[in-house]
Image (tube, rainbow, N blue to C red; front, side, top):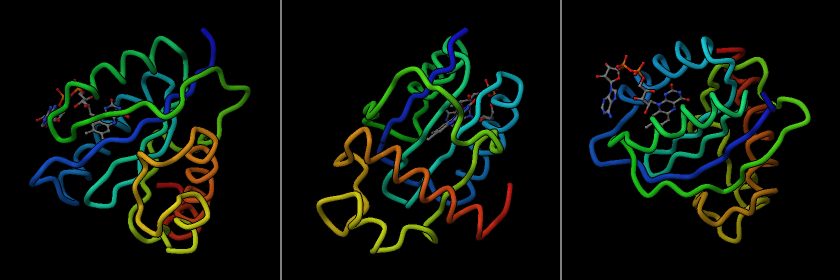
Length: 143
Ligand code: FAD
C-alpha cells in the first residue's frame, strides 16, 4: 500500500484544552502505532494542524474517524499525496504546543504574525510542520 501523507487544519471546539489534547494524543499514539501511522499534531488553543503519514488505507481510515470527532470542527485538507519517505518516522503522533510557535517561525510561513493554519500553502504547511517538529523534538525529545 502506497505511503501517503495528509495534512489538515481544523478549529478547536469550545472547552477543549490541554488535558483533552493529552487524551487525544494517548488514543492517537495507540491507534497509530498499530496502523503504521506517524505524524505530528500542532495545538495552540484555537487551531489544530495535523500531519498523518502512513499506508494510504490506514491514513484514510484514521482521517474518517478524526472528521467525526466533535473536539474540533471546520476541517480543511491542506495537502494530500504520495510520500517518498516519512518526515515524522520517530513519532506515532508528535505533539507541538505553543512553545515552538514563535513569531519568527509564524511570519516565515504565513502572511500575518498570527498562527492561522488555514492560510498556509501545502508546501508551507509541510515546511512549517518540519521546522516545528524539529523545535519540539529539541524541547521535549521523542515523546
Ligand atoms: P476509543 O478507544 O473508542 O475512545 C478513546 C477515548 O476517546 C475515549 O475515552 C473516548 O471517550 C474518547 N473519544 C472518542 N471519540 C470522542 C469524541 N468524538 N469526542 C470526545 N471524546 C471522544 N485518532 C487516531 O487514531 N489517530 C490520530 O492521529 C488522531 N488524531 C486526532 C486529531 C485531532 C485534532 C482530534 C480531535 C482527534 C484525533 N484522533 C485521532 C481521535 C479520533 O478522532 C478518534 O476519537 C479516535 O481515533 C477513536 O479511536 P478509538 O475508536 O480507538 O477510540
